[in-house]
Image 1 (cartoon, helix red, strand yellow):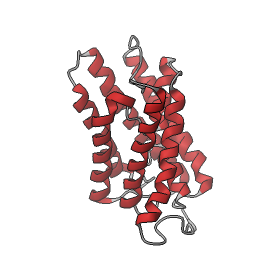
Image 2: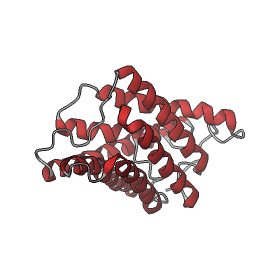
Image 3: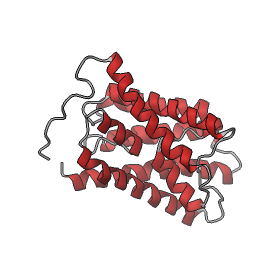
Image 4: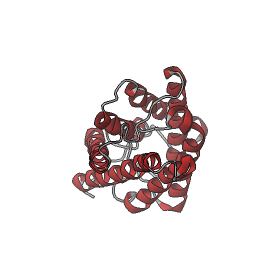
Length: 228
């Protein structure tokens, strides 16, 4: 599969994630709570599950710069493709938040993530949440590809679970692109640093954790050459 096709898949997948996930938050706000917190968490988990099934065999359905960097640190993804993937994810996320701005011009936040308590509390939450998510992704994936029923259900379930219990505290972003796009569109950048740095740190910390519990060669082995 060519790099251009894989990058376009990342644009589409990240657009779907941000449009559906943050869209659920916006619609919950404007409808007086019709979706509920549980519904928002399920929306995030289900859209990721759907995109893994739809695009996992094309791009791996990373949909998240932290996941791409985690795969790179685990030597399951080539360094030269990190910037194209991350750029594609940011483009998809910005397009989604831009679409929501057009649809809901009066909404103040567009589903951005913000700490309910202290910045330090949310930072630690985001590190731990993303670390757990990345550990699951590394455990159920082959190379940098998430394939099959096990991967989709496991990853979608972890996202739903983490959003359910941690969303009211830190927003449970676990994804710099998901937080950056609505923050830029809404013009609220004060706490953005948490959601740009903590998920990346958590994803990177998941790599040595995976090495500790998996057989040798699972992570940090030489990356095979790619011909597509």
